[in-house]
Length: 107
Image (cartoon, rainbow, N blue to C red; front, side):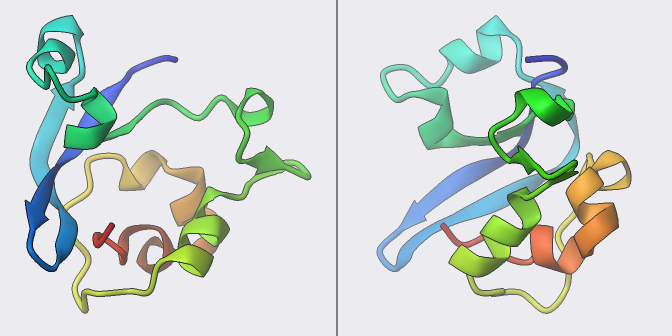
């Protein structure tokens, strides 16, 4: 995976979990990933990588299907989109709309 970065930190509460998005780019290097121990990094961070198109399980029929999957699984829980450090480069956001991809910070 190329250019792994942390988009946000998962905040756990009594009513469930939410992602608190970061305002700046944070590269998910070995030291950042090790900080989550004993939890797995995916239990603590919401992360992203550069789109790998056909190598990705979300890429079908010549396009990214991640936005559609997120929209089908999670209802929007915010009216205003959170800060997103990858939105301008996100194929799903450009094709389906940022609201669909980023409007569901609830896990």
